[in-house]
Each structure stands twice: as C-alpha cells, then as structure tokens.
Image (cartoon, rainbow over all chains, first blue to last red; front, side):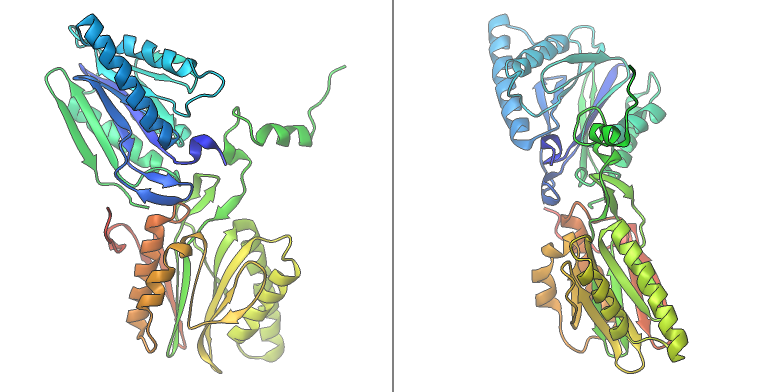
Length: 205
Length: 231
C-alpha cells in the first residue's frame, strides 16, 4: 500500500490565451472503498489564484489550512495580494520545513499575475521542489494517464471555452483508467474578469 | 569487472521504489463484483468489467462471464491469471466428460471440478468463483466456490471485492419465485450499487441468462446502468 494512493486523487492545471484552468476529481476514498464524492481538493488563495492539492486527504486539508494562514499574514503585512510565483515559494518553504517527515501532497498552482494578468502554472513535489511550466501540470494517482492525455490534447493559446473542453476531456479520460480517482469532477476557469466553476458529469464508478 | 543485472535484480528494481510505476510489477486482479441468481427454468449471471493492475485499470471492458460448457458459465473474481487457468482446465475436463457420457454435463459436476482444483491448490491460488448454469436434471443452479475451495449451492450468490457493499441490499431485496425479468433487474441493480462504491469494480454490466433454450447475453453501458443516491 502506497501512502500517496491511499485516498486517490487527480489534478490538472493548463494555460490558455490570457486564462488558466484547474480541474480535479471529487472522490474521497479509503483504499478501494469510496466514501464521498464531494471532497474539495482545489482551494482559493486569492481572487485569481488557486492551489490544487492531491495526495493524502488529511494532509490536503491541513496544508490548505496552514497555507491560507501564511497567505493571510503575508497579505496583512504587505498590504497587497500575493503573486503566484511568491505563493509557489511559500508552499515550497512550508513543505521543505517537513523534509524528513513530509506532508503527503504534491501541489499544483494556477493563477493570473496581478496587474499583467499573465497566466501562471506550477507544481511541486511533496518536499517542495518547484517546477514552473508554460503548458500544463498534472499531479495525482493517475499522473501517467494525465500526462498522456495532456500531451495529446493541449495546444497553445486556447480560448477559455476551448480550454474548458480540453482540460475536461484530459481529466475525465485519465481518471477513467484509474481505480482510485474519479467519481465526479470540478473545473475552475480563471480569466481576467471572472472565474467560472463547472461540475462535470462523470462516470461514477 | 562489469556485472550484468540478473532477473532478480530487475524485479527488485521494479518492486517498491519511486522510479518505476507500481503497475509494471503488480499482478492483474479482477477486483470485481459478480453475482448469480436461480429462477424456475434457469439462472441469471452478471459481472462488472474492470481489471486492475495495482490501481491502473488494465482492461475496462473485461468479460468475466466465461463459458465452460454449452449451458454452464462461471463468474470469475480474484487473480485474472488464476481464474483463467482454472476455467480452461474445467472446460477441458467437461469436454472429456461430455464425450464419455454422450450428454451435456451437470452443473453440479462442473462445480465439483472447480472445487477439486480450488481446494487442492488452495495455498497457491487466489480465485473466487461462482458457477451457474442449467441442466435437464435439476434446472437452474448456482454454486459458490470461494477462496478456500468450499462448494455450496445457493438460491443466489454474490462475490468479489464489490460484494461486501451489497450484502444488506441483496438480503433485503431477494425473494423466492422471481421471474427471469425480475432476476435480471435484481442483478443489474445490485451490481450497479457495488460498482458505485468499490474502486476495483466498474465499467459496464455484463448479464447472461442461461436456460433450456441456450444463453442470452446482454451488456448495460453508460446511461443504461441503474443510478441511485449519489451523495
């Protein structure tokens, strides 16, 4: 039994033209048994900044709560919204503090740079190594399947509507090949002026 | 002096490290939900269609309802390799038996051959089998041959990892004297509930009805699969 696949999860973030999207499955399970299908794994850290946390469910909740605490204090001291790249560094620090007894989450960050609204996505491993990419990031128990789907479906400069279709199909078909993720999915499309959240009709098996 | 990695070295590398995905070394398992129900004149058997290697779904359209003679089928759960091998051996024995006797084998005979294999090799096998069929002496029959190799006839049987979630449902819903259609619906609803809760079960529902006239197979996919409360 692997700790990272004890609960099961799948998260993808992708960039488009002046927008980003982040999507996750909704399953909360304990090994093979499914307990709930409304488990939140994507959390808002700012008006156009989201973090997705796949991995052990208890750490998903603890890390999101502790991170929000740090971000709140940052925004009070600096008197401004945190930038996506700075959030990535805060997460990296939070995770590396636990280098020899880590949180079992491998986060994914998606957002728009305040001011320029440039798309930003990044992912980190469980001990905080950051990786920033231009196209897409994936994390979870079906990461191999998600890499395959994203590599084939993604193309640069997708409009928000096309990006929604692309990220949805990538996630849905990847989790359909994983026994411990799926059971519903949610997508957030982040644009300059609004954030649209949609729940996907997915296979419930 | 250069050393050539041997077979053991390769398997040590593939087992339990972070460099190689788990599904390269995990065994194929038909995690599964399987079921069979007797009715007057035949049996209805059903199964899901998921085969997993670790948590990777290796086959999402598996056929776990395997014919072992013209009117006898088995539902397979546990190790895919073990159950396929056992079904092949039973098929061989029944063919031989049919040629010697000059008539179709009894379901009871098929079930007992399964039992012989599963009990004799119980320490080496992981196979949970439900044997269901029709013969002219006793009509429709269902026999359950779970892990240790016991064999017992039941009015209906459930098996596989998904069956644990539906014991309450089947016990409260089953009644004696159901018609063929009622049995089909009972099986479809039970398997749908099991597939919903069990991560190792899913895909499509395969059903088969075996009676004097032969075997009638159906597949329920997508929207045809019954849906219940989804939280």
